[in-house]
Length: 270
Image 1 (cartoon, rainbow, N blue to C red):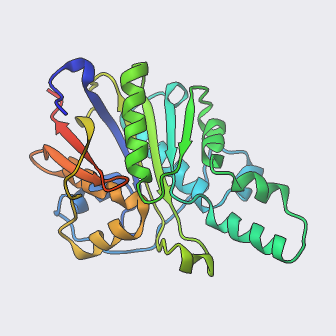
Image 2 (cartoon, rainbow, N blue to C red):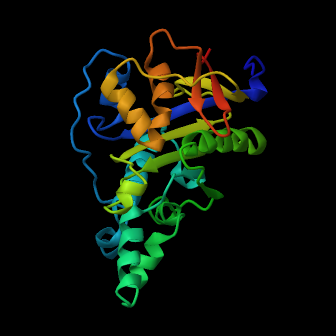
Image 3 (cartoon, rainbow, N blue to C red):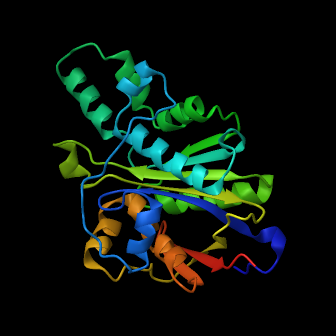
């Protein structure tokens, strides 16, 4: 899909990244550009500072992950978090809470109201509203392994239709055993993009998306390619590699649904 008409261009203004050996976009960009070797390390999650103390104690891995990368992307874009619409995309939701609820049901115990509240698929969106005070529309979706692609397509569409900024947050974390054997997501990874209908001083590139039948792009480094395949949110890593490339890569193909892929066309902000 061409990006020559200004009205059709969507600009990436900020990126957030957190995963094993990828502590943020500043350091992750060097890895994705090939200028720094990838060294797998534990993902360091922080409790969201903007939440009340009681909520900080209750939120789990997935909420911490989504809010951390979302805040990084918004800060990098110098955007107003209150004004951004949001799209949250996760393949499975909060596995820890799902596991705890299954245990409670199996043991015929009462279910914790906090566990139940945090088990819903749009819990990160709700906590984001508390932290950011955003009142713009929010969408939460799931498309199994294609969740990032579905989230990107939704976010780009919203920017074009509503002509307003959108924060896309894609995130996944492992289930505990025995659910892990049925859904083997092995690591925690989150990626966020701030998308805008107009270029700013902080814009990194403009993009457009379209369905295609080409094979999805892979990564040239075995450890990172394993990460891409092991975590649904990791399907975004070829896009981050394209954004980190010098000169900017012009096209990347990402995994999507039903034997179709998602072609992302990139252009410099000129």
